[in-house]
Length: 290
Image (cartoon, rainbow, N blue to C red; front, side, top):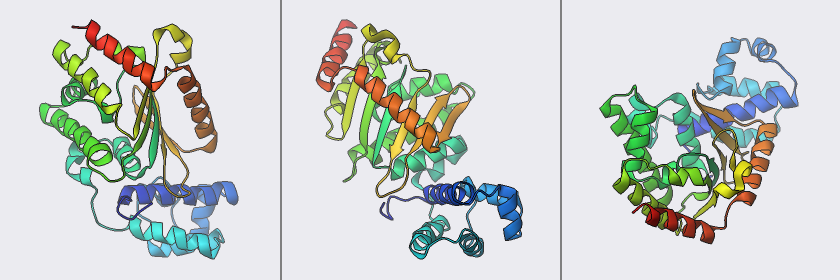
């Protein structure tokens, strides 16, 4: 991962995950046991492991000694620790009044990822949405927000598209599997709906984007319980996934959860039409709606 793509939050979360694995999986220590050995509160260590607090150089050194980390691994983690303490704000900092902490994490992972595998049941992925579509679904899903906050969230979505697909030398490799229902819902009214399907056809031609649709005829093969995204990163950083639920999104980095989600994605991808047949289906639905 290049320094330019790594954000402060990404560095903190990645370092925290590595420290949690060292403590729990490699040494079998509880938070309380590790905190006692360090002479600090377990709440402090918990916040560091969850990426909610920077790890000071002093605490980092003590953790490396406690976990007996080899020199090569220590140097890699030290680079993460240093970048997690920088004061450079990510591009979305100016929108923080409208962002949840889980969405900030999502943005950090998306900003640093090499590729994403995403399954959607009823909505189109954020990186392929038109502004009208994004505004309609945002205003509906977050009805408690004021107009200014909705505007901010729509701006964030448009900025994500510019930074990760359209105005970058290293676009995110996007593998999308959708159900036909996501195409059929007429979000935003007839004109906006048609423009959205046109945009989907346009983006499906992007060299880094693959779109496949599970048709209604496949039935139960497309009826997973919830949407999810799996991010993959350059180098040897482990994958991380996000699941979408009524109460928000859930971050998943346990290897068992990731193996299950990768199996699920292979399953829904296997049930989907080819990219070419998907384009025919999208065009047919668009033309049928005229």
